[in-house]
Length: 497
Image 1 (cartoon, rainbow, N blue to C red):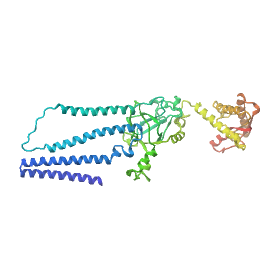
Image 2: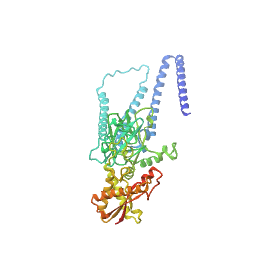
Image 3: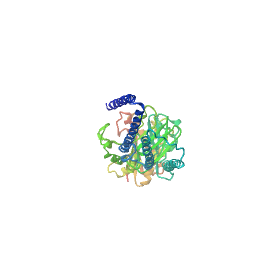
Image 4: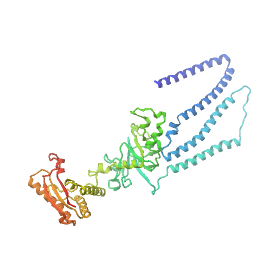
């Protein structure tokens, strides 16, 4: 409704202006052309001065009123160190151009008023003045020199790459229609290699799974985290068309170009919570959030990653939340992230390491086993002394250990060597499929196979016992495939310590 009123008002003003013009033409014919021209010149000169004063007041007032939104002052000061340098450069440019803007407009309209046409006044021919030319050429050249040198200094600092010895985080942002994929390095701190030819539905950025550096990299969801005060290097790429990596609150903006990797380095200096506190006393952010009536705008504020290129009809959806937090919260968030390879690729047809154990898995299994052993050693009940050997497996229907079982059994050997006083019982268990006698014999053979492996590794036989329980001690239902799988197990029980 307000828009219609404004449009109607503008149309009405245009009609009034046309009618005034017609009335002026009629008046000129009545009073005579020369008199009408003289009055018209004077009127236009005065109106020019009025317009000049009104325009300058309007520009100054609106610039001041919208300074936070349009110029990045107040609560919207840059949240990064490099952004503050850029803002400072814009301030210097604004001062110089503002002086020129005001001075030239005052002179323009003043000359229109002062030198309006008057009867009998003749213009003076002024062909050349070197002093004036030096002034209006030298001063702008000097100002441009200052701005260019200042701009180069800011550019060199803001666009500088990281030093390999610096303490920084490197992440990767890949734009595609219509979202961002944010990839982080895992514990090794290094992003793995990738190849666009390897992009598939399960491999959105084309990671090469033969590169072990890729195995701990993880992808984020609808939001990603960065620690405050830590330098961040962002690799920026595109999977299809031209996109633009844009973090407006940090003054970070860099094209994502297909086939040409770019980067941007910045240091967040303000956490999300600190920025919200800035907005808390800002009137515009005291309003209720239309998307969440339970919160005010300052409470629901989030830093966001956007695309600053018109990359397609769903360009608007390329929005991802960025949370800048303290180092402790960032570390806690990292702990919750899962390797993309381990969660999506591991042991699928796309996994080149299928059927083998990775070093990380071997290390993690050893940690898990040692934790279980420590709990069993400290347990007060018989059941607490039992450890299920999760990764000891046999070929179907036989007592032949699988090749991967040795890693779990080597953990048992390590624990037996570490705790030289303990004695253990190795128990074999089966599900209820088949006859009882057959299951009993199979469980005994499997317990004996584990016994033989341990003695073969130097563990004294008087510290070991092997017994088969068959199907007599189920821990789950035999009515489901999952339950039967749980019942087929090998256990270690601490007999003495």
